[in-house]
Length: 174
Image (tube, rainbow, N blue to C red; front, side):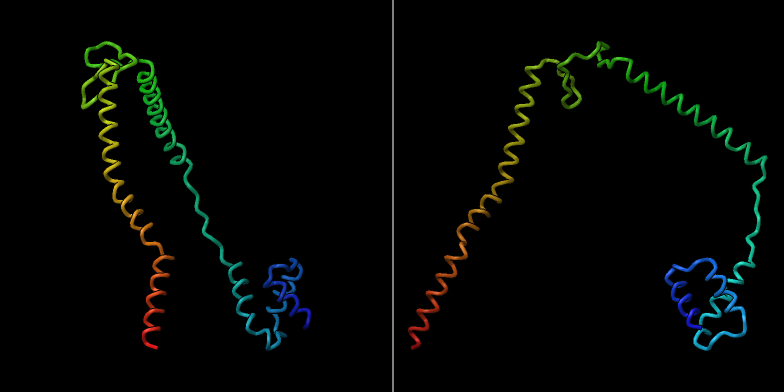
């Protein structure tokens, strides 16, 4: 029965051959199962019962299967065609502003107004950049102040000062 032990070890490691698995099944179906192998008998009995269970056969009727995809397919083709035509119209028809003339190279929209003068657009952009720079600078000031405080709080200097104080107190107490 030492071979059964080896086959069981291999079985639980997943390295048995089909012939060895058949031998195990036959062994556990029989009445000569050793007491130390009795714990595995229900496992192999369950495997045998599972083989006997057959899943119900379910067939999809052919008529329903053939009729459904066809209308769905037509609607997908129609939707794809509409999307393609819309995309072509959007890309091929030039954009026109409110006056009906095609937009030039220097059209900028600010608060809903079209500005075609490059000089005015540049002035407005410079003004906006200056405001943004001011916002960034003022919001960065606390960080600069915190860095200055951090450099003032030199840990080496603080430690040296504390050491001197402690030494001074110890010398007074002695």
